[in-house]
Amino acid sequence: MAKAGKRLTQLDEWQALVDHQSGLQHTHMRELFTKDPQRFRHFFSEAAGLSLDYSKNLITQESMTLLMDLARRCRVPERIEAMFQGEAVNTSEQRPALHVALRSQSDEAVQVDGRDIMPEVRDTLARMEEFVWRVRSTQWRGFSNKPFTDVVSIGIGGSFLGPKLVSAALKPYWHGQINCHYVANIDGSHITEVLRHINPETTLFLIQSKSFHTQETLENTKVAREWFLHNGGSEDQIGKHFVAVTAKPQAAIDFGIAEQNIFPMWDWVGGRYSLWSAIGLPTALTIGMENFRALLAGAYAMDRHFREAPLEQNLPVILALLGVWYNNFWGADAHAILPYDHYLRGLPAHLQQLDMESNGKCVTNAGDPVDYQTGPIIWGGAGANGQHAYHQLLHQGTCLSPADFIIPLRTHNPVANHHAILFANCLSQTQALMQGKTEAEARAELEAQGRSPADVERLARHKVIPGNKPSNTLLFERATPRTVGALIALYEHKTYVQGVIWDVDSFDQWGVELGKQLGEDILQRLLGKTADGEVSDSSTAGLIELFRNRHHNGH
Ligand code: G6Q
Image: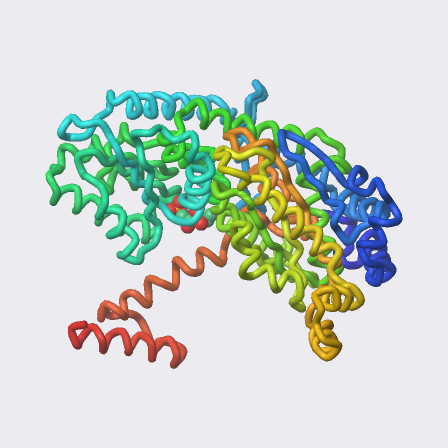
């Protein structure tokens, strides 16, 4: 946003970071740890049940000071407040992004277009509560009067990844009688595999679509409805088995969903920020409303911290600035999310959407091309599995991908020494990434193993690990509704702060919209229907032809 007319890369604060990076680039983190025995304490912060050790980063106190200067120059504190105040932080669509209102526990009014939205938010939560209670207490039953055993959520993108993550993350809190399934993809195998294992008499479908216009979701819903009607259900029983969450209730009614079965969504909630709304219903049905409210409370604790804590102790701000530091000053274009927690294995997929859809932008809020890198590629997976696979690239590869290691102090499932072993793996990875192994150490190790001088000579350089690879370690007591809520909110706010620094609109997604538009024309051609004009490129035309030939041949 307004930086007195100067481009971001021209700011004194940016240039100071360029200079600082060139002074630091030959310093090894080993030295930094040796110089400052209190380094862990100096780069450690806690909030909302989460602890962040960011000492294993390529930073000094000065780096953090300069990064904070940049944040202030980019008016991060003011922009944080603007988001909470309901200003149109989604600039291209000219609307607010008020996911924070969905989890607010305060009496403060939140105005959108001169109207307080909090009564609607509370009413919707109360409706969710009643619905969840009726299903879980078996008052709301299927057409043959049997209680529900399965909930199938049909939705994609933001109407899928967040709830799916939370459902899996909170598996220890699942109500024993209700199983939760997600259908997202338009690949028919997805819905086929889900329907194969469930009974229409005891299945509740939740149709999750903010726009109620998404092809994948609507087509999968049609299949679910047909399956229901062909397996014992009837039209007048659809009302017992199909519920929708949408910001376009009329479209859902036109589609055949009973009006009283529709939960609202709002324009001021982005899809990837919507798990806190009624889009969270599949989660609430499986973990219960009390736990769902605890999830909101955890997120709210992080919201308060984000809004109130000084930048220097502000977890989302620290993570955001470290990301900017590597992305823009060290040439990193990837960032790894490595949860050492089986229940959080879906976190990389959710954060991939959250971060890449929010900050994968190449023009500023004013529409000018950026001359610096914006959002990195987010990738990752569960530890310790990744150590036996892609961590190789982290240790010895040529591209720089800082990593967040995320681990609970205690497990839900104490099995033998598993948790201590898991924890040891996590810590030893961050330590190895930081320290590396010098050639002298590699040689000494080989010699100690009794290898011949020729072997030592041949192998030593292959065994060198450069080290100096940055990582954060995020810890929490256990994956509870509160900590999971705080963790997801932490990353939402990190993403926003980076968007503020890069001056991009973190809440639009025109690239995703493009995919929705283009598919329609090609579909018409695949189905042999008339479409306007010629396909403009020979690759797409050739591939359409291949598909058509196959289908004409009856395959
Ligand atoms: C999220 C995106 C996108 C969206 C899906 C589903 O921020 O906009 O992933 O959530 O395309 O959209 P509907 O909820 O409208 O079906």
